Amino acid sequence: MAVGARDFIDKLLVEKYAQEKVDNHDEGALVSRISADDMMSAMNTSANNFKTMLELNKRLTMVCYGVVSRSAKYESITAA
Image 1: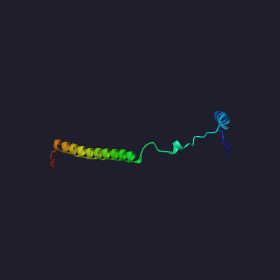
Image 2 (image 1 turned 180 degrees about the vertical axis):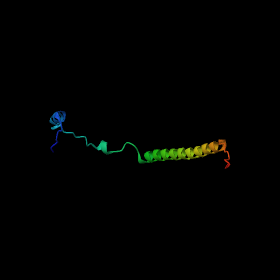
Image 3 (image 1 turned 60 degrees about the vertical axis):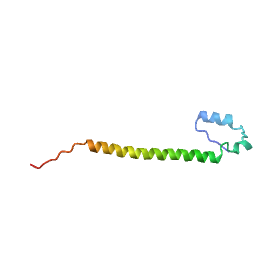
């Protein structure tokens, strides 16, 4: 497989690593270290926390709208 170098540094790196071989396909690399149930539980907890934060944000927004609307001073403008 040919690799094209774009500049002098790339050319040197290609020459340096052209003949390197890596063999890291052992059986342990393909086995998950975290169980699927633990991952699903963590994702569920995170989703529930996010939904709770959204609900609290919605309620806080409504409270703030209420405070602002009650403190507003409305004056009637009469046509002259």
